[in-house]
Image (cartoon, rainbow, N blue to C red; front, top):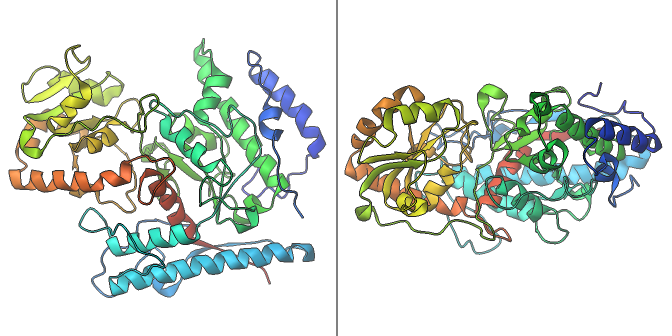
Length: 485
């Protein structure tokens, strides 16, 4: 069985292709793609943790906290490396440069928090301000340092369609859009030219594509077993860990994947030791199902129309929003069933539909609503939070155990309402109890936070892809790899 460090992985490389062919044919006899093709169809370089990541709150006692470990005394988590032979001295040197680079970034963030000012080599076109940020000085400087320094190596191993591409439309779109952004050489300024230059390593696999190509058609309950998904991802990790030193030296702590599919959290369930440090960037950020806010990253779910990067902007001014609250969607999961039981088509001010009437426009109704309900479906995440923000509608989060996107940086309490499932019958009273003045402030903050949920291609500073990258960047800042002497 594989462990977090795969130095004991001794299967001869020439034996892997036939073994994986047999595995893949056994697991998916109906599919014509061979796992060996996915894993080995590539060019590649020859060989030649941890804690809460919330940015510091505004300090009241002069101390500066960064995560649980304080930048002020430089006590980041450390991962000790095995002793390496002399021929690896060059890699030790490159790692030393990387860790020195990260130390400079931590120091710059600390300075910005203490001085309440930023330092940049270029003119900053946007300066975060206001209470929507947990600490605007820390976030701004951290973003500056990320843009200036952060480099990611995307592994070349694996072949399409389940590696190196993903869905770019509909509810899993953010998965494919991120893979596409980070998987074309020279396209993103965050891409490392060589893995020795990288602060972090991206596994360009698409869980949505794996389910589509390896699991379809699903004809019985047994077909929902996650074993094929888990074996494929584990095999991929073993391949890159065998070819390169990077996984083994950190135990996977500087490696990450990005997926919006409901099944994505289960990639690590079969071998928790192997993946215990691995960063999973997930839409399905359910803390009751193993999501770890200090290690994993909550990914916003974005439903993209075909050929577009977002919905039409039909949001009205606050004074032109006659609907108190709005929701339309399927009866997916227990939370929505409770919502429908109490509110489905029962109130003229709280408009709740399971099937939207043909004469009504979904996006237009969001733009005419003061509050947009965002109940969890089968899983905790829903694209409605991002849709509400785009529409200038205050999101009302109705969920259990949901770790909200970009919560390291954004204070959701300033621009959203959170209603426990148990209080669904009280939705109207709760929302009517929010004063006009408070609503106007919250709605104005929704408008300000929009830039962080906008998808641009290529990515732009402070947009949704930069925010995803920043969440990974924070987690990389939170530990140090110790170079042996």
